[in-house]
Length: 102
Image (cartoon, rainbow, N blue to C red; front, side, top):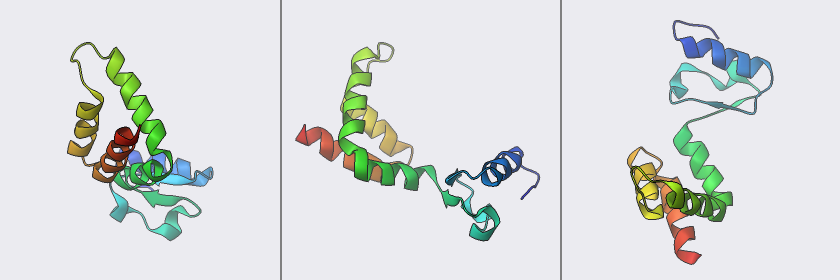
């Protein structure tokens, strides 16, 4: 699993030492057999899965983060919106729902 991209070597190393997940936006560059036993996931998918289990924790972290941000100041809801804007839509939806419940 080597190629012209610098990341190919990093991903090959991760797969060879038994990493659980190969995190990449270039999922088409790798076949599941090539990286087994790693699972291939995009950040969008992985963070969505994590938020299914840990949405309350992420909501708390973003609330705490919003309190310490000075330049620029950002509310918890703005931080969640920022995450949705970069493609973590499912993550943002789940964390936003958790924030409303807390």
